Figure (cartoon, rainbow, N blue to C red):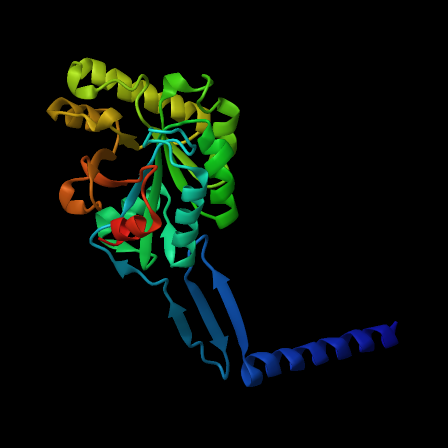
Length: 279
């Protein structure tokens, strides 16, 4: 028993000596990750001192952000809303290969309200209506490029022929595609009463919130039409941001309820695409 006690004491002495060397002579580097932030804290413990170096994630001032507006990713002669899949792929590849970072809705909102973004070339990719080819044609390209996008979904079109079904919506929402409101019935809001507008917006928000367990905050005006009642209804139903179909780069000066977008048509060439997002 005495021999065992002696061995235990010897081990304790050795461990104490090793600890002293590590913390007082050599120094130990600790990396602390803070949630999903990109910042990191490096603590070097040496010679009884604790110098701390904090490297914060950089933020870049932004005055405008291009918001791409797509509808269907398909080919149909004479229909400018249907962008051929090869064109869409070329455009997404251009973004990826030239330093553009696709944003989530929350990242976009943060950039618009603070004037700062995490990326040098931020961009928001949006689709209107919720065509089924957004799943079959666009989604594989977005996944391959690790790019994010937003679909403004017409609620009453879910599960209808030619449009996304509930299963597709849930799958996409788990893999970088965010669903926001395009109202329930895609009616021109400036042609209906305030009360009817409230119902369109509220019912759409509730449907998406229930389906995807989220807090839907962003809306795209059907056909880009709205009036003063629309702006009031938007706030009264809990939305914080809304998009038009007016052309141009989006900026805070437009007002968060009247943001511009860059329309991409079937005939948009890659050179025209470059100019549109760099204007």
